[in-house]
Amino acid sequence: MNHVLAALNERLGRLFGDRLVVLAGGTRLAKRAQELHALGARHTLVLDTDDHAPLHDSVIARWVSLGIKGGFVAVEQRRLGKLLTRPSAEVKEVLRDFDADGEAVVISTPYNEIGTFQGRPVLNARQHSWVELENKTTIDALWDELSARRAPAMVFDLDFERLWGASEILDRGAGVVWSGDGPAINGGANFVRRVRSYEEAKEAFDVLAPKCEQVRVMPFLEGIPVSVHGIVFPDGTAVLRPIEMVVPRRQGQAKFLYAGCASFYDPPVWIRDEMRNLARRVGEHLRGTVGYRGTFTLDGIATEDGFLPTEINTRYGGAMVCFEDAVPTLPLALVQVALVAGWDLGISSMEFEELVLQAADNHRAGAVGANVRAVQPTEVDERRVIFTGWACRLAHPEEPAHATLRLSPSPIGGRLDLDLHRENMPVGAPVAALTVAAFALADQEWGTGLGALEPAVAVEDGIPVEETFEEAVTA
Image 1 (cartoon, one colour):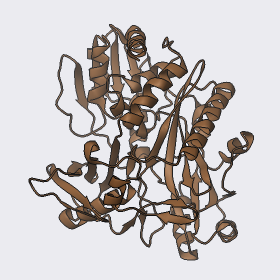
Image 2 (tube, helix red, strand yellow; image 1 turned 90 degrees about the vertical axis):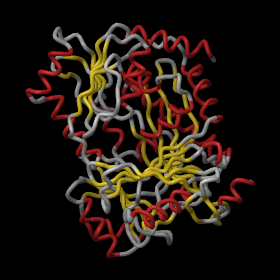
Image 3 (cartoon, helix red, strand yellow; image 1 turned 45 degrees about the vertical axis):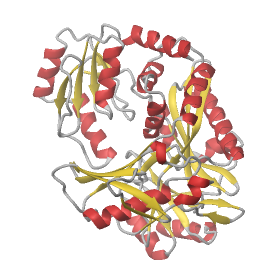
Image 4 (cartoon, helix red, strand yellow; image 1 turned 180 degrees about the vertical axis):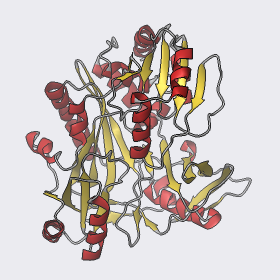
């Protein structure tokens, strides 16, 4: 597939070559700047929302730290929106100095809907009709239109008694899930709660009512939270492999912990096919109805009854890092920018799918971690760890570690990351249980305060399939 890579990079070079580029917020900004430099960009200005700029090469990019990072995506995006629409005098001066003639193009975050920044086009700005499709309280209409199987659900305005009544009707014995949506950005399970009692319902309502306009009630689905990505091209939809969404459950609490994603898990082949087929149908529907271009995620649960969808996200999802790591020579995030901007990439959707899907199946990766507030580290601390049975322990100096736990400073306290060592990880099994064990060790070693967690587990014939690490390795 070298010819496909060459064609993509040549077309991206035509878009970004000899251009001034502003990266306004986002993640992996050093990687993005290096990719732009490799494509021939004249120079890049990085407006970083974090508090501390990483090491950088001034030939590749000029780096300006804005210090506006928030603990939640919604907070950071609101601050970034203010930057794009009403920049401070200091930011205006930096922009004028970098691009006196106003000829630069701008790339912002996947959430952004703002189309210009001080007269300069934001290439990856989303259309409002695309954003509306992310609403969890209206998405069931799409599943019904596509004749896709889904779990039963009811949607109500903020009426507690009606929500609780629906919960009693839909509860199959494991509780229900309340998913709120409305004007605020909803990601990372911020407005999702598991409800198993009247008391948990009251707590969930108190959280959702100030932020949401409606709430969807759905039975709690036992199984592995999974996502599959589609990329809509002018000629069709490329569909990638399933990704495990690592979402441990807090014991005795309604709130979930969104802890990232990983591609080590392989659902049964028939569920994989079910997910990918639905994603292709969703992509074609988006292309035909709202003129969508670029990446979207189709999220749901891999249950004993198959894949049951819960939502879509019409943007470049965080789990795309798994594919970036699988094909490091392909600037996937810039492919997204080019597609949203209407740029001809010179290859078909099927050529793109074959390239990325094969690489991702052969090269597994993960981005697992959580923000923690109980500690405020002043420097990075790393611990090599070993998984044994259902537990996680520190590795001895001579042992090959299965993963590395890292605690880093963060604007809201600390950041805990679990780097899974690909060469020592079993392929096929979910990583949720490993994450729970590693986070328990972090609580013990650093006092991170994540508390008692439970992993999601695969279910077959109604029976949970809970493998130890050793069983997964030898499976």
